Amino acid sequence: MAKTWFITGASRGFGREWSIAALERGDSVAATARDTASLDDLVQRFGDKVLPIQLDVDDRAAVFAAVAQAHDRFGGLDVVVNNAGYGQFGMVEEISEAEARAQFDTNVLGALFVTQAALPYLRAQGSGHILQVSSIGGISAFPNIGIYNASKWALEGFSQSLAAEVADFGIKVTVIEPGAYSTDWGGASAKHATPDPAYDAFREKAAEQRRARAGNPGDPLATREAVLQLVDAENPPLRVFFGDGPLAIATRDYESRLAEWRAWEPLSVAAHGTKR
View 1 (cartoon, rainbow, N blue to C red):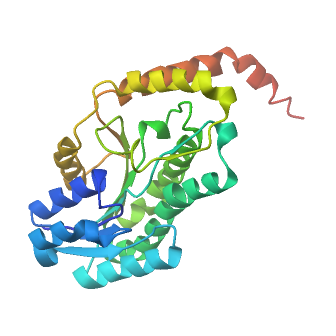
View 2: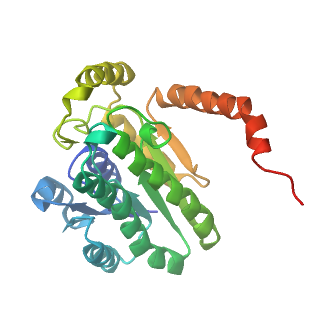
C-alpha cells in the first residue's frame, strides 16, 4: 500500500535521497525546504505525487501549517521524517550564545515542532512512523562539534521518551544514527565558530581524528533501500545505525562507560547514604 511521507530538509542529503526513494515506488511526499526551487526537478519528474513546501523548521507556526497542508493534500500521514539540521563546528569555549541557540533551534526544536504537529493526525488514525535523523554523534561525542553532539543527544532523549508515550496509539519511532557519508554535512551546510588561537594545535589533532573516523564514507544512495525497509518493517527498531563503522565506535564508547561506572561503584553506593 502506498504511503504518504512528510520530509524536512528534502533539498539535499538524506532528505533528497529518501524523497526520491519514496516517490520512485509510488508513494506521495510532502517535501520541505528553505528554498523550494531546489525541488523543482522532483515536481517535474513526479508531478502531483510531490508537494513542495517552503519551510524553516525554526518557525513553530509555519511547521504546524506545513504539516496541516500536507495532511489536507494527501488525506493522511504515514511517515514523518525529521531530517532538517546542520553541523555547528567549534570548540565548546568558542561557541557563541547565538550559535548555540541556533543549533538547538534547528536540530532539536525543529524536530520537536514537526513531531508535535504530526502527532494529533497520527493518533487519530491509529498509525504512523516517525523517523528522527540523529547521528553517531548522538550517542558518542567528538571534539570540535560539542554543541552539535549536545543537540543530537537531546533529540535522542526526547525521542526515546516519545516512543514509549505513543506506542499504545499504534505510532512507531525510529532514531536513525548515520556514520560518515559523502554528503555536504561538513561542507556547505556546516557552520563554524570564530576560532580561538589557543585551540589551533588541538584543532588540527581533532581534524586528523575526524578524517580517520570518516575512513571510507558511505554512499547516500545506498540508504534509499535501507529507509524503505525500515518504514515497511512490522516491528522497526527504536535505534538503528546507517553505515559501516558506527557500531564499533559505540561498542568502544559504551564498554568504556560501563568499565568506569563499575570502577567507581563503591563511591556511587556510598553516596546513596544510609536510610534511617
